[in-house]
Image (cartoon, rainbow, N blue to C red):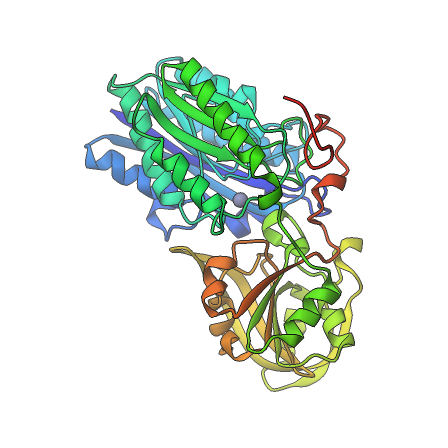
Length: 484
Ligand SMILES: [Zn+2]
């Protein structure tokens, strides 16, 4: 038996001003067949899992590219085609294969390709034919299309947001595809469109219970796998809305009925699960009034993980205006400022222009007299069990506000983004992180309180007013009843 494994993806914010090209892939993750010989990260970890699963059965493994770009704007057409064609060339060379396991995001858009994952799955199916088992693991912020379900045997998405379950979902994908390969099951995919655009945070009820409910339905009564594909609100594609995905053992009627029933449960929870966020003023007032710190504020609109620049200054400027102190904030993507701090060196004090450089959504730059407290080259931060690159990072202090600036655009995942520079986040009254939800697992244990801030930015959290052009379906919350 032979398994073919690969990763190709990014999460495309079609409203972001930052093009996604080969430099972004090279900086984030770009392996040509040897990802499993390196430390795993969120999107290469499944390849490690699949190699172990296959080799434990004495299967042969053909490993192709592992390419992932930090979320940004639309992927440059020829860059997507080059990566896809490398994957397909490797697949042709590996033939015949029994199982194809792909790690993709599910919300990748390239010039000329609104559905990159559908394009990849269809191309893979053409190479391997109808009998090979083809499956993919996707981020739950994905758009499920008919082209994808027509060409895959199994689609499994993460269940958890923050995405802490990539490894478990990878193991399940292998198990369900294995059932097809050995003839124990015939996986059939059913989907149900909830007609909703929303963000669902799974560490809090009622979503924690819903995740448990999905798990409880799997592996019995002819149901092989249950996923909830949340959709990605800032990707303007025809299939943007959230969908339930059920993989049954050759029982489409049962799969359809379960997908519809679960979709109904999600619909019924819509008011409870709609994320609440505070204005900058309200959030800062609440944080200032807190009896103990640190209050962790999430600047959700400038989350690099959703394609935002991560250099916006709205919250920073508001804190300066209020004269706040004992505040820590990061990560600001500002290679120019980092370069100047590196040049000046630790201990130097000078006027530095920070952030506000990428576009209108970033606000105005902020000029501060800073002292460079620490410079770290090749910094990285934890996310789950993986390490993620931050590039070079500097800690600068100004007027009671400590900032971390870095050279690789990334959201703030974990307190070690700060501690490796010698900063103890627990010692601050207020910590502002640029992230929507992935910060939560790392920061909630040290936070006295977590507040989501609706600042201006590239990924504003008002789903009713996102200016879609290609996504034309009626959806909640733009309309109260989008129909079914
Ligand atoms: Zn995601």
